[in-house]
Amino acid sequence: MSSPTPLTPKNGADDGWSPSSWRSKPVAQPVIYPDETQLKQVLDKIQKLPPLVSPGEIERLRHQLKQVQNNQAFLLHAGDCAESFEACTQENISNKIGLILSFSLILIWGARMPIVRIGRIAGQYAKPRSSPTEKVKAEDGTIKEVPSFRGDNVNGLSQNDRQPDPQRLLSAYFYSTTTLNYVRSLLASGFASLNNPRDWSLNHVRSPALRNEFETISSGLADAIDFCRTIGAEPSFVGGAAFERGGSHGVLSDVDLYTSHEGLMLDYEEALTRVLPVPASVLSTQASTSRSTPGQSESSRPPLSRSQSGLGDQTPASTSAPYNTSAHFLWVGDRTRQLDGAHIEYFRGIRNPIGIKVGPSMKPAELVELLDLVNPSREDGKITLITRYGAEKIDAHLAGHIEAVQSSGHPVIWVCDPMHGNTLTSSTGLKTRHFTTIVSEVTSCLRIHTECGSRLGGISLEFTGELNEEGFSVTECLGGSMELSEEQLGLRYQSFCDPRLNFEQSLDLAFMISNHLKDERRGRKGNSIMAELSRHPSRT
Image (tube, rainbow, N blue to C red; front, side, top):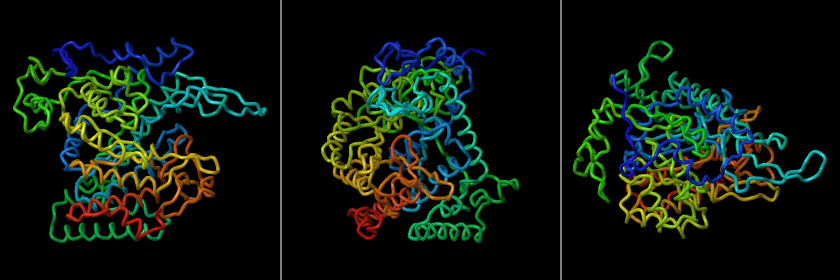
């Protein structure tokens, strides 16, 4: 059997891309290891370890993101700001998945369309920092300068553990594998079954109003399922026997949940980039894919020859492509998206769908140039633009970015990140975000997309289902139905990075977005989210 022939990135023939070509470019947010020999040994070991995800799963996500782009689905991208090794526990993972499922169910109920779920999970261990060092107070009371904490896959949170350690990359691989294994086990065992949605949320929700709203959805869903059983609906639809008793998954219990992280540590990403066979079903479609003409979707473009489509003369069975197998979806951050930088060089070559953070510092022309680099063939579902301006700056920037992309003809998915541009420091000295400001950016984003003839395709959130020993949610963001005040932030502030919405605040936002999508589906106009805030002022 002949070896698979690599499918090179469609950036021009022999453009020189390889999983390691980023090394010839300047690296933003570099990590300087004291022992390069040890780093190489660790990376060599990671390179020989099995992939975490498969090409088939990555291609399935690409297909579903095409549906999001074509207004046939909505994207939920959510999870921790940064995972920690210590938080890799059964309870934390279960609660996080339960919150993602609960949020998506609420959106489905209002939108009546599929939700594509991508978790910030099983690999989100690194974080960019504004400075490579920081000043801390030592145990003897003196102030000393130490390397900044860069996440558990780089160094430790303790000021005495700040030297970058390559072994932490290996630990990150195994913690990611453990997390992903447990997530797969949960989903395969019926945890996501719509027969039991109360198991995801109601045990954790202490707000009576939220419990009632979620109970309304659960009861309506139970009635619908019971009706299907009564009229003799196929067991494959309603789930049939329980999974533990040999039943099939069925539509009501089988969900897709994809993993993602910021592709910050390029050494690690390169080690997990594998040239693997592209699934034959994908190649049979790609062989007749569309011509790269601005403004046309793939389905409306005339078919290409095999040489034009990048497949050359290879048979489908012998064609391969570079997949990043550390996660299904990766994104490049606002601090590492330099056009001539190492991160864009790496990202432009992998077959995974990718996200790009877009903030106030991004010029419209720069955004188009960036899209030309990472998606020159203008493939549908390939690029997700995650905007993060801040509630006070979104009006000054989003419309210009939308108009530039529309004029370029690049197909993209627009996603709102209302978290990162709205961080502030409380009077007690803790980093926090206010629920009302988060809602304000979401509302402005929806309005501006409508005014520009565009569509918001998803939401990107930092939230957590973590609970303390007494079963209470974290207290890191202000407001929401809990009416969390600055004085209460210190009660259960558990984040070592950025503040996250807790369980109740997340569901507050889910219901608001769901009601907007429901009104949109029914043809109602108006600002339903702000109207919701006025009806329920406690949520602010």
